[in-house]
Image (tube, rainbow, N blue to C red):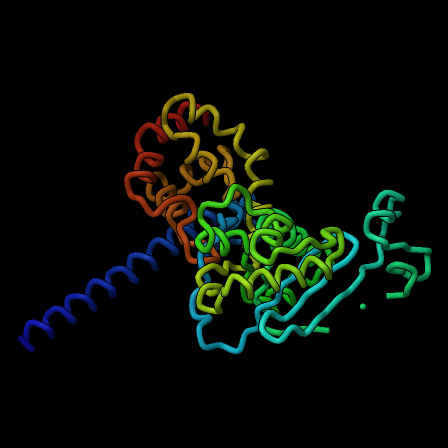
Length: 335
């Protein structure tokens, strides 16, 4: 029995060694195909015929999958809300509050002022006539419908303000409370926050003020007996929204060039979208094929990106189809 265990362990180690070797070879092949002659240490600066065009780095397609390893860590669950003009947060377990009303770059409409009570006079930001601005580290952010609104807005604002790395340093996960509430109350007709407040807490509240929103959401979570164990089933990476935006912006730029391959039945639309979203167009595929042939295409399309996932697919059938003789023939026909 002990001998069998040793043999099994040795087999597993050998398989892992071969897997790592294959990944290294794929990565090296992808670099050679992507960077062309610039990857060759012997290239001369005076070589006018050298191929110096580089294939763009892979833009990862975010998975919005659960962030692991957060159990028993010193994180804080922060219930937050964005009302575009203000940001409010409440620490879920202690109730510690953070409220910051952001100075707008554009005028606040009179309608928004009437609804929110927020007025910017050019010097001071006021809430209901009173001048109104804390910090949580290792935060797991919770927002109702945050996946579609709050987290996207926050991510874009952090990026545009050149604070995205700081945002990732301080925020370790994002949770949309709708996803948390559905398993708790699976048969509700709707999951809007005002409806949950009335259904669970038997309360109505001011749904246009961020502080009222987060206080109510915090109360809903407590009344529904949502535990930290429940919450830790759902956090995804705070960087996923920015990756999604970049990936989506790549598609309309690159996808039209792949319609030829789609029309010829070489790739399906879903695969073409993954290729284009990763930053590749048809000219890139031609260039890779000219440099390294089918092996180069295979290496580039299967090489791992910055989040450790294959650029297009880990399924050999998928990228072998893309890198088949059909693609080679198409490349030869057009070059």
